[in-house]
Image (cartoon, rainbow, N blue to C red):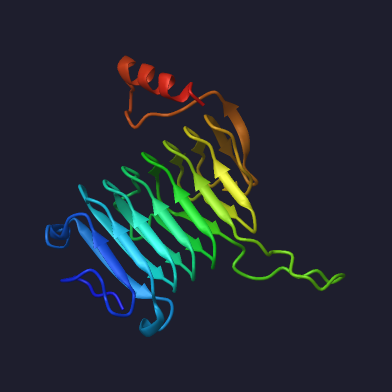
Length: 232
């Protein structure tokens, strides 16, 4: 289906690989491996990758009718499994740990959507799971309870801590802009912007806060972030 390294970016079987800069295959910054979750003859999927500015390692398993979009400036080790008719977006300047084999594992069931905003920061050992993966059945009604297309949304400028797990099962789970998910937290419910969540299950432990990539943020950085986040 997909070929790597690619010399052309669209194929007769309907698969498409679009690179902002084809030289990223040769400059040592992009480590890309793609596999199909269905037979290559029936793939019909698309992968779009923006400009790679620092090292990015992408392992993408993609199903029929799915689309994976990696923004410009994305960094780190990502393992994405996007099943049939699903959608994954990792937006510009979002980073993950670059010193481990897999920093972020993204598991997306058929028909589900994962949207990660701009300028997010992921540590390592993180799992984003969108959908329950298997059926939950009522013994009384004999109905499947876990129906519905799941959505997992992480808005702009969120910090996701080491070994945390974020799950959306047959519903929508969202993290508001500026949020922080603490180490080893397990989050299954939406949280508002500009708060810190911790624990299992995760709960809000502080609100009206945000974060900076700087170890000791400058006054200019503090004012910039506060002005930006006050909009939320």
